[in-house]
Image 1: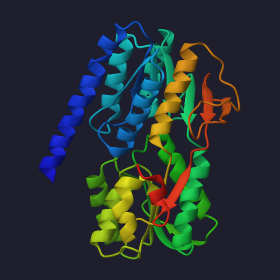
Image 2 (image 1 turned 30 degrees about the horizontal axis):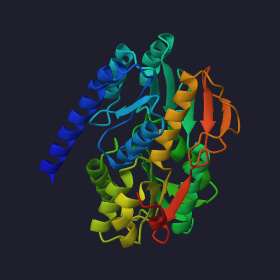
Image 3 (image 1 turned 135 degrees about the horizontal axis):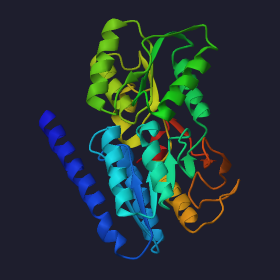
Image 4 (image 1 turned 135 degrees about the vertical axis):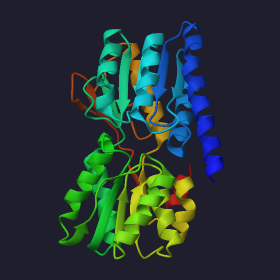
Length: 336
């Protein structure tokens, strides 16, 4: 398993380097270049987003769209990729920040050079022209927790996982979850905000530690796309499927086996494919100096009537309605 993981990571590193390195050639085509930069390449969540970037490129032959990202969930590596793209002079950046604060200076310089900047999962980003969110993050975190509470019969110990403490949306989701759980006096939060760095194996090890430390724990609320897989595996191997509740962000196809066994109670998600398309659609509108207006249709499912508000900085916050919650009975309706 470890050997496969090393090969897998090496492959994603090469892929990220190839994608970033190819931008110079793309610029020579005399078309606007929109460079999408994700938190980490080679995991199901952002592989799915890549299909959206590709679909956008096919539907918009007047622009060139590409996606790249670091081989591991490392904000410093992501920063380097973005700095390289700024130096190459792309027309637009569509970024899913690992840690928004780390990117502020570079994104500011990008905009000063005339590069359009659009972000996703970062409604606190100051230096962006538009941050695109699939839904209201507080509503999403509360919805995950409400599903968890229902499974736990509104009582017992529970804990939370985040990709990183610097990940804006993850901290919003678990924060909203904590707030929601206050409605239930019997729910007791223990050892919250475990950092996973979107590593299913690392999450699995941390989950096993929590199960040893709190053998009476009844629930987990997770954030990064791979967290449900790591925690679910730990629950399943401990013979606790259906006895411990697990609700978190995840995709239907990778989560299918653990949903079937009951190790995962329910997953929440939005379609990364559609988010990639929406980010690129906004970037193209901004390149064309078109106005972004409340209620507008971005031409992407889940973003057909977006709310447009003032963002954290001078830019805008664009909110869609792409939230989905699914469990064993319904996940097959959304297989990707």
